[in-house]
Length: 293
Image 1: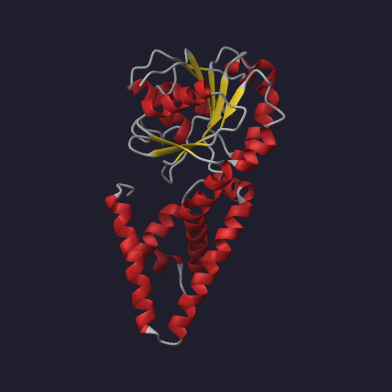
Image 2: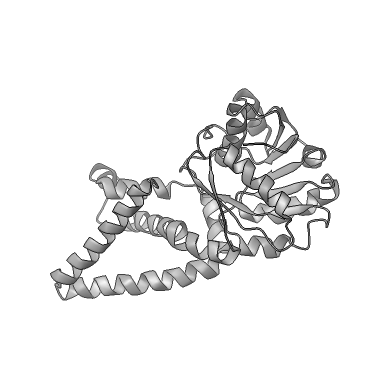
């Protein structure tokens, strides 16, 4: 795949931003990769790990020559970052992001980005519970979906450039409406994380279960929940804030289905429970067969 960007600026050098840098280097792209992060500690580690070619402590200088600017920071940072860098963005450049909520971000940024700059929202569906500059790895995006949610203001040429960029990193790219994206991700990602955060918190709050017992007797299912619940709290609190409408809609559907299961347990309706579990097991098999595990 061809990379059309001579200079790429990655803002945020944690799991996603760092993996983008490493992925580009693995592909031996000729792009110059400039990295920016809030702390000197992160910038120093980024150079030590060779996440980027150059680091820049000044945000405005970091973007001034970039043909592509990638926001790989929590959703709540997008607005202040765009507000600061807008006067310094290179004419004709493209800004994209890696956030897990799209519609609210588009609405928040649409009047802040200069008319000669295109903002093409993106969401690589890849990650781990780890965070920080030591968490990134070059293969993170390989054979994973990346969803782009362009607007009517985006040119076909620019959309194709971002599509090719993610394909270069190994991703399968899908174009999707922003609102539809938010609903899909609410049920496939955001609600599962909310459940994980909640159930781990509930287990910890049980007065008759000590921390030692929670750790000692945790079976595979609970260990999976604790892994998910170890995800970056700042990132996830932002996700639930920015995608609140879709999350609440999906949460109502989930609560209704949970209520049906509760009634089945109350009524000792083994047939209903079996039918429900059999259906969900078949869905799980389709997920595995599709290579999404």
